[in-house]
Length: 198
Image 1: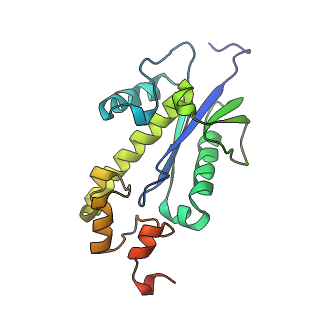
Image 2: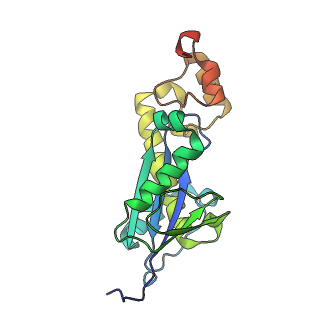
Image 3: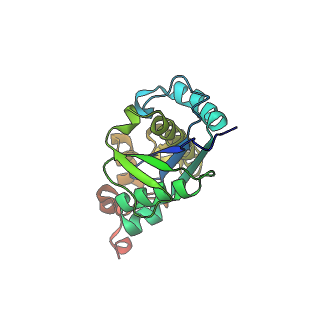
């Protein structure tokens, strides 16, 4: 049973700011200090197998967690930075119990938060709660992109997850963008037909 002195701290991170397609995914996690999780690390530095093994462990052992998807249309409407900050805020607001403080990876804080917060550059390599959030966000997004591949197989989303690889850029030039592409991103905009620009 939690004592009244327990101060709940959430870690927040995102996955998918750089891709040309798919959502940006934000996660917030409150770890249980009584149940430490071995093997946490920056999701980018972990193998896919390690991330997949940690994903259900984090969900089971954390006091609270939430994963928020921000779709391409919202990214195009308000830009990728604002979409990321909005997703982080929504992930934090969805946590129950509400944290007293949030540690957010990066150098910017969302404007409307349910608690005090601190931005931490490189936080996904320093803070276990941010590491856990980075793993949830990365695995959730990768799984989503694999599912999107079934709907849009010409682009190879299951392999590059929407990032601007040579394979993806070639597919964009050959087929034009699909509904999952971010039209505000320059390589996607360049692949649009003139009639789609306005």
